[in-house]
Image (cartoon, rainbow, N blue to C red; front, side, top):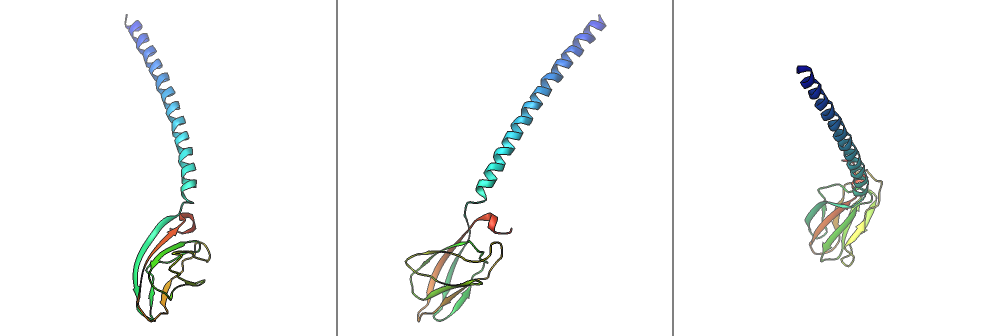
Length: 141
């Protein structure tokens, strides 16, 4: 009698193990599929521009102000100004900040930080709000 119970018990145990192995195989396949999807999404997301910082700066007449953050080649600099004669100076050149356009792409080598400075060449002070948008894979973090 004990042998019959032991045999039935081991049969149930073997069946339970087979079931658990099947479930484990299914879960591993689901994890592989999810991992592949995450890899695809990561590749897509790394090329989406993101706002990296915002600055509000007041530049005195004939003065200059250093931006707090560095700019990188390929960054997009969006700005709002209500004055004439404001320039953005970086390691690769100087850009006139035209109040009509409100956006420019920074030239330079990708991945190399550049200090930037605002130059006011007018006779009156100028206030500016600037946003920097960058593609994450172009910036070392």
